Structures are given as structure tokens and as C-alpha cells.
Amino acid sequence: MQKLLLCFVTLFVAGLNKVPAQNPERDSLLKLVPLKKEDTTKVDLYRDIGITYIYENPPASIPYFKHAIQLAKKLNFNAGLERSYAAASLAYVFSGKYDSSLAYVDTAIVYANKVKDVSRQALVYLNRADVYVNLQRFKDALRSCDTATVYAERSENKDRLARIFDIMCGIYTQQKQFPQALEFLDKATKLYLELDNRQMLALSFMSKAIILKETNQADKGIPLLREAIQIAEEIGDVQNLSAYNNELAEIYAGKKNYIEAESLAEKALKYAVLTENRRQESVVHALLANIYKEQNNFSKAVISAQKAYNIIVEEKDLHREQSGAQLLADLYAKTGNMKQAYAYQRISTRLNDSLLQQRFDEETLQLQTSFQVSQKDKEIQLLNKDKELQQQKLTKQRLLLIASVILVVLALGGIVLLINRNRMRQQMKELELRNQIAADLHDEVGSSLSSIHMLSQMAVAKDVNEDDSRKTILTKMSINAKETMDKMGDIVWMIKPGVGEENSLKQRMERFVYEICEPKNITADIQLGKLENIKFTMQQRKNLYLIFKEAVNNAVKYSETEKMEISITEQQKQYILIIKDYGKGFNSSLIAKGNGLDNMQHRAKDLGGKLDIVSSPGNGTTITLVIPV
Image (cartoon, rainbow, N blue to C red; front, side, top):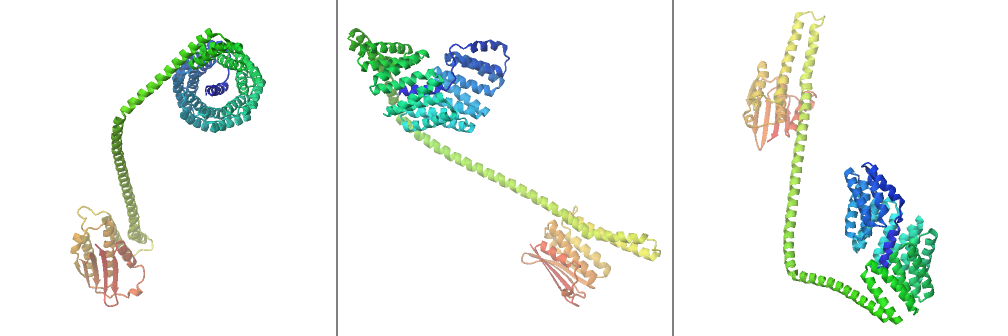
């Protein structure tokens, strides 16, 4: 598993731009710092300087990234903040400080989402996945990979997508879920082929060879590793040639082809020394020691094992140091150097004891934690029960609150709707009132004014010379003017009665009867006592009065009656208005239109009532209006 993890880290780092140990560009960048203004270009400058350090000395790069972050915050430069936080996160990864790296990459994600650059969003989520892998938080790493995949697909960045698949391959490989690991590795390989990224393609071949070796299919990995070596030699990828040759050497060693294995291991060692990769040197020396040991060449095995051990001690890796000391003890024993064998056996035993103590301490801590947990289980159960009860209460309270809020919202909505409906109804009433006033003015007053106008023109005409004719015309004008005034008064009264006139329908009807009947010597018997107790609306008052007025007016004008009877009674929740004359009557089937009877019928319908006209020649006329209470 250790070798698999190393392979994965190599995959990730190999995709980054290499910076040589001696970087003349760094000096020139440092000289620019005091010359630059405090603007966004200086933010980029600080970050560029940090990048020159990040691979050879990661801790030295961090202060420059922090300077970039401080200045970007001051300038509110979100894009610079995202890139600087992402770079600082990578520096902490290379420094082995994964918790700090996670904090910085999380902040980089915040600013990447603000900037909304999908390519950068893919990168920062990819970086966070790598941090989670180093923290062994594989579920979180897969979630970050899923998010990074979405952004990489949106940006159509195949390189980002391929590297995401690489990380997912590493996650499944470390969990020994090899079918899933191969599935994502094949996806990455396909993309690297499309992009003609030969360096990453070679690394993919090595990753597949390692997985095949873990699944007892080492022979299938040989052509893949040879292809990786060929690609690396063609493109000059010296950094990874050591790893490729070493992996191939291990496969041949496993097949007991020690001659080929030793040749490949020597090549791997040469490239490790050339690239100053000390860790890789120790890995190759350890492999050579085992190859020599299997061939019983113990003297050469001791030399290689000692070189590997010396490098391991520098790295302070207890596990590898213990296994290296044990290998040396075995080899010195084989050569008969029991003193050295004893010395390294003691080192191996001491380191093993340290590792056992470390493991014991960890297990003890776990046991203590388990014991404390078990002691508190009952308390936790009781607390959980209380919590459940409280949760149930809270749930009920929330439901009641939600129901109350819904009811209040519905009630307020209903009130608003009612207010709007009443407002619209009022507006409709006002509109109807305007239309009615206009119609009444046109029908009742317009014709009279037109008549007055025509008569006035006749009175001033040159051909009207006789005083009697002029007097007759003026008399008609006076009559029409009075009628117009009466009609205007009726319209105003029907719309809005004056002070003290709200209940004056009875008086107005009586006055109208007397005023129209007295000049004709018509006796009128009026019984309107019930009207005093009836509250009519404006519309009802208007329709009732106009029906009454039209009926009385027709009787006076056309019936030649000498007597009229008018009454209003209440029967079975109905008001009944009767207007009866004793005139000449008429044949209702022969009535000519235009005498107002149709208008009377329409007004009765508006009242929700019924109008009956009963008449025959010589028997007078009876008009009955029935109005529901």
C-alpha cells in the first residue's frame, strides 16, 4: 500500500510545472517588489515568487502567498485571492501540513465561486480532493471529485477532467477496489491520448502496471512499463524514469529473472541520483539488496542495504528504518559478521519496540475512549430519549407554528382579496353611477334642452311677428324649462338626497301626484304609509320612483280619468305598489311602443320584482308592481 500511495503522489506532482533549484527568474522577480505599486500586478508578483520556491522549499513559499493574500484583500481582488489561497494550500500539502492546506483550499473555493470561473472551480475542488486523500478521508475526496468533474465538464477542460480521474483511481486503489480504480484510470488514459499528453500517459501506464501487480497479473504490466520508459526517454522525463525502471525491476525480481531485474534497478538508481531524489535512491538500493540476497551475493546486498538504510535514517521514517535494520541484521548474519548483525538486530528490536509502543499507545487510547463511551452509554441513551421527546415537542410546535403562519397568510390573503374585491365593486358602482347619470341626463334632460333650444330659435326668427305666436312659444319654453328643472331635481335627489331627505320618497311621490293632478282636477287617493319604514338603496329608490312617476304621468296624460288610487302594502315579504285610474283604458295588445312601458318593465326587473299592467277600453288601467323585501 505504501508503494501505491507513492505512485499516486507522483501522478499528482508530475502534472505540475517543474521549477529548477537554481532559478535566475526568482532574483529578477524579487528586485521588482519594491518597484511595484500596491495593485493587482503586485499580487501576481508575490504569488509568482512563491511558486519559484514551492517545489524545492515549500515552507519558504508560504510567506509570499500570504503577502499576496493580504494585498488582494485590501484591493478586493477576488481572482487574486482565489489563486493565492490555492497556491498556499498546495505549499502546505508539500510541507505535509494537510489541515492547514484544507483550510486554505476551502477559502480558495469560496473565492472561486465568487469569480465563477468554471475552470478554476474545477481546479480548486480537485486540489481539495487531493488534500482529503492525504488525510485518508476518501468519502470527502470522492465528493470533491464529483464537484470538480461537474465544473471540468462545463469548462470542457479535458486535462482537468483527466487529473480528476487520476485522483479517483488513487482513492479506489488505496481502498483495494481495483475494478473501480481501473475504470477511472482508463478514462484518464483516454483523455491523455486525446490531449497528446505523453508524460501523463506514461504515468497512467505505470499506475495500471502497479494495479495489475497487486491483482497477481504482473506479466500484463511489463509491456505497459516498457511503453512508459520509452515515452519518458523520448520526451526527456528524467524525473519519472527512475520510478518506471524500478517498478519493472520489481516485476522481474518477482519472476526470479534477477539479471534483468538488476539491470533495470541500476538504471533506476542512475536516474534517482541524477534527479537528486533521495527517497527514490533508498527505494532502489533496498530493491538491489533483495535482488543480491536472492542470488546469495550477500556482500553486495549488504552494501546496497546499508546505503538504503543511511538515507532512510535521514528521512526519519520509523517503519522503513526498522525494516531496513532488520534486513541488514539478516545480511550481516549471512556474511558471518555477527557483531554488526547483533548491532542492527538491536536497532531493529528497539525500533520495533517503539513501533509496538506507539501502536500500544494508540490502542490504549482507543480502549480508554471505548471504556469512557461505554460508561456513558446509558447517560447518552437517556439523553437521546430526552432529546427525542424534545425533538417531538419541537416538531409539534413547528407544525403548529407553520399551520398558524399558513392560516394567518391565508386570512391576510383573504382580507386583501376582499378589500380588492370591494374596491373593484365600488369602482364598478361608481362607473355604473356615472353611466346612469349620463344616460339620465341624456334621456331626461337632453330632449327638453333640445326643445327649448329649438323654441328659442323660433322666437327670435324674423318671420315670427305676431305677439300671440311669440307668446305661445315662450310659454312652451317656460313649461319645458320647468320640466327640465324638475327632471334635474329628480336626478340629483335620486343620486344623493339632501339633508333631511333620506326618507322623503313618500313626500316626493305625494307632492308629484298633487302637482300633476291638481291642474287637471283629478282626485288622487294616496296610501303610502309603509314607505316610511323601508330603507331603499339609491338604485332601488331611483327605479321605484321612476316607475311610479311614469305610471302616474301616463294616467294623467292619456286616461282622461277623474280619479286615481295609489297605495303600497306589504304581503308575504313583498311590497305591492298599485296605481289605478278610472279612465278610458286601452287595449294592451295594440299599445304603440315608445310610451315608456318598456322602460317600466326593465326597471321592475332591476328591482327583482314584477310589473303587471291590466287595462281594457272603458274600464281604466291598473298597474301593479311587486317588489321582494
